[in-house]
Length: 296
Length: 264
Image 1: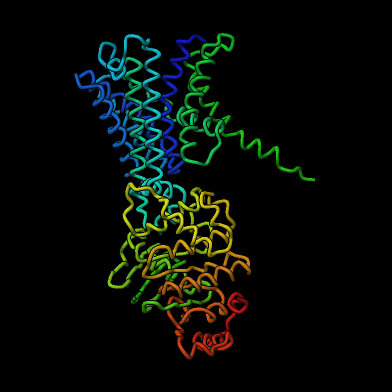
Image 2: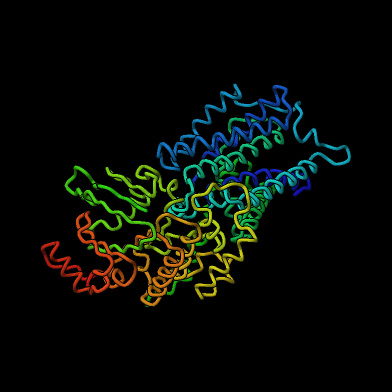
């Protein structure tokens, strides 16, 4: 594998580290199986790309993309909390609604950003190659987000979100407005995914309507891989594990796609991801079977 | 003070399995009183507790806690007034959170939760001091996940948590029923200590007549969603389980067949 594709894998891995953090918040902390991600990722890309193509400052455009993602998360949570639609179904409804919304925002299936300024082109320096600089910028962004999340989940409000996912009845008895906490948590989760979508569009030269397909599975794969390479209970280790999971996952995908002898092509990506998640989910089951004493 | 008037709750209304769990139940508990509540299965004990806590909506009636009408408030809104320990030891704590995080959560019961640190260094000493009273060695395990503790330990911590923050009424829903006899005694003794020490207005549902008479200031017996027996003071002091049973049979006009009541 070339140095170039190594840095490329790191770059995408870090962006999906943000997605994985979002998925971690919804699936693991709130126990809310949220597929909105498949729509909020391209939403972030679409909002970011359209704003930049329209002449907006890329930093402001990225912030707007993050807010757009957060709003999507809020709507999914509202469907669930106030209209009592089952969590998974609420997120699927939001996901397909976002497909149309994203097309509306972009006005066509893709918005190229080849000639436009991006947060990366602005921060670029002449003495570092751009393919090295991009992952460096992303490392700073991802670490910053991680530290902010660690701090937030140690506050009273953050603790309420964790309690809501862990034992909603107890949380309510302690005076936690659990519905409000689900809305807040889903906003943070999808905000991170929207941010990732905007950064992805800016590294890949544009937003595309199909860029969201399989985002949730990749995010979940990252979470699961992370949890198995760094099994931990402490929040700051969990967030670290999730980011590492995303990077390691992308690295192995790049390795697989770059190794001619395996014969995998880029279009096999989603299949490989799905198989990986199935594999990761089945391992604990197999372990349990093997460790169970045989009946006489 | 708790003043419940004319509470009605009907489950599955209009169907063949309609159950009238509370039928115009009224009860007033003055501040600082410790009331024990007994009754057979289906008498409405848990329903009454859940109505006061807000887990169940009443069909009609009023629930005043001090001067506040709470009958239509969601659980989390009235949590500042109501403290609670559940029957299931797993229900009262968050197993994914540490002991100190659980306590911090309880200490903010009914307060706004902002962006200050959940567990402050200054509170840790207080938590340790409180946990030390249990003599379970938990004061040195503040950062352990509470899921690692046994059911009895978790129930004891739940009780401490309920008393961390002032409440207008403490609800105990058969909170010793799921524990082994020794642990149950321990938790019951702790209940008595905490309630006396903090002068808590308390309503404790129990399955055991022995328990009902031994602790507290007043005993209520529910039957078919109503209060059928209400004893306190001198009358209650000299009472034996057999007296209670006799009175109960008189009220019901039939023999008690629920073994759980007799054996508790």
